[in-house]
Image 1 (tube, rainbow, N blue to C red):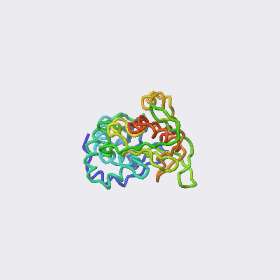
Image 2 (cartoon, rainbow, N blue to C red):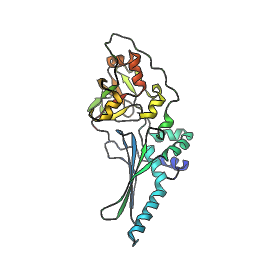
Image 3 (cartoon, helix red, strand yellow):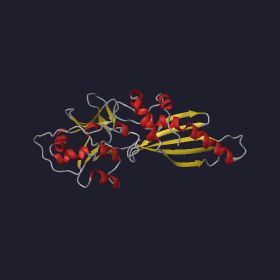
Image 4 (tube, helix red, strand yellow):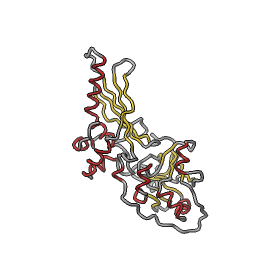
Amino acid sequence: MRRLLVAVFAASLAAPLWAAGSGGAPLVSEPGWTATARVEWGTASLQVEIIHDLDPSTTSLVRAKADAETDIDGRLPDLLARAISTVQVDSSHLFGAYLQTDPGLFARVNDLAEASHETGLFLSSDFSRLTARFEVPLFGDAGVVTPLFPTQANVIHRRLGDVITRKYTGLVIFAQGELPEAGTTRTARARPAVFPRIWDEQMNLVLDRTMCSPESLARWGMVGYAQSLDDAAAELRVGALPLRLSARGLFGDTPTDIVISTDGARQLLALPENIALLREGRILIVYDSLN
């Protein structure tokens, strides 16, 4: 795979933003070309689909397909850069905003984006179009958000108070349906992000990425996302005895930050073992939809 160029990344910052509720962000829509990107939050990966028309004047189907593959390869750096720029990092920023303000991030993401791999290449049923699909991991050794991890975790302070608690194996937050937006009269549906903050009802910060272990972030990110607890991966993340809370509201420019009850926050912050599960990212947020 060709390396992503810094100049290409800079040009990609004007890419369309993530389309809420759609199948993906449109990256290109022009004669002969369609490209979209979407984050698979359940698997923590960025999926890119590129569709390119075959040249109808080429008499050989094999040659037309090969030419289309060459064309896709030539545009791949630009399209991957645009796709990465659309990832919702936190309530206030898409990844493109970080690229725009941190020139040193370009080169690091250039290298990490090379880990993207082709997951599908096929012709349409009428042999008129070629579709190529690529996957870019968010986390892991080659995760594209790895350069945004803190170098060390900030302290999470214990919070003492009159609350009954116990040692939990994880935290599950149910954030389904319309939820109130803190500080407004509006409601919204929660949206996933790479680094959602967690607040209590008094708007005290419970957790953000700077409080998380860099090793845990690299392993599986700050939180996991699911639409049910039936998935075997859910228990792997939060264990057999998680604390279960219902979100009390949402916060942020984009409704990605979760507000939990003050008592729930105290249950987590009263014991060192529960603080440790927050630091290790043993958190699962359950949504109606992960689109």
